[in-house]
Amino acid sequence: MPPLETAVTGYRRVNRWWRKIPPDEMAVARLPPDEMAVAPRLAAGSLPPISGRVPPILQVAGGSCHPSFRALCSLSSVVVVLTLAVVALITPAAIDRRKSISPSYYPLSPLLKVRRGLPPPRPRDYQSELATPSPAPLQIWRRRPPALMAIRVPSMELHRPAPLVSGGRGKTCLQKKPFLVQAKRLGGLEKASTRGAQESGQPKKRAPLIRGTVSPPLPVPGNIPRPPYVGTKDVPEIAKEIQMHDKEGIIHMRAACELAARVLEYAGTLVKPSVTTDEIDKAVHKMIIDAGAYPSPLGYGGFPKSVCTSVNECMCHGIPDSRALQDGDIINIDVTVYLNGYHGDTSKTFLCGEVDEASKRLVKVTEECLLRGISTCKHGTSFKKIGRRISEHAERHGLGVVECFVGHGVGRVFHSEPIIYHQRNNKPGQMVEGQTFTIEPILSMGSTDCDMWDDGWTAVTTDGSLAAQFEHTILITRTGAEILTKC
Image (cartoon, rainbow, N blue to C red; front, side):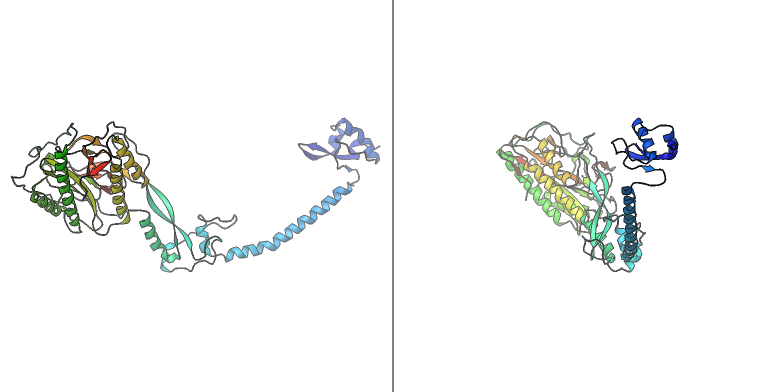
């Protein structure tokens, strides 16, 4: 019988795989006893029955192997050869098809589902394409019409997170977000970009507000009654008394508020490009004194004018001066009159000339916030519901509510309790029938923090973003609220 190492070359299971065992390992007798027992018979040429411990394929001395193993190897070789032949035929056609695709397909790959294996996007010169428009590609994507192209245009969207009550100031931020515009040809890229910017609500760029020359205060006839604060330079403190009115007081309040509303509407007709805010002040002053009333802002804490005019980024309390209004400006006019011992207070933001869509949207949403706040008012309702309703609507449109200016009670006293907060708050207090106060929210497209000019009155947004304000004096009734300053 030949030696064991020259007689058998076997296979052994290692980690679920059959590994070929060289003769030297078998000579050292590393096989299990049952496999070692069959080794002499294998050398003699007799193949024992295959058991669970003996591998199904055994290669014996002399180079012969099992017939099933030889058939399996032949079949595998045929399959490999056929696969290589098919790949060799298909690859050139696929390469030619890729070359036939328009080059404009590749810059769009970040927006589309590009198959694996396409070459990386090539840099693209949009300036030359704008000068000489290229034809539309024959095929971009199966799900997209061939006449349309997707182009990425950067835009600026305003994002305002939930307001943070910290020192009476709110927080806001600007966040860049991309959006898609569809154009029929590359030649329309510039036009599509402009249209996309307008639809996104991006305000038109304008120069910062510049103060003009303030003229001296206008005189008031001596026969017109004046409020108690006239003649003092100190700003009066907010009175603690609640403005409650009987039937006679309500009649006087309605008269004062009606006059204020008519003056405000007249002032709005004067808003045109090249008109100065000082000219608006003179017209308002004359209309008020002709009605036998006193312009409440004049002399209040040393305020030098009869009306407040707040342009663009000015939040409130703007002093009329020699600056002329420009096309595209927005201006808030705040009118308060003192008639028969009662104050009527109202304000409105007007559009000057051709105003961009973002500014129109700001003005529209601000007025809606005022009306939504008024809709919550009736006898027994908490004051905090006003701020919640205003904040919800402003945040829904991505605008910020200015927290450093509030509404107030009004009547015989210009400013009194209660304080009306326009943002979310937990202040106590409920509305009472016969009570009068103002609601006057200020909304900003950017920062809700303010900077005060050295005149002590003009408050502007810190980042120069536009602000708008609306104001009404209301009377609380048993079932709701009556807007006294509505024309």
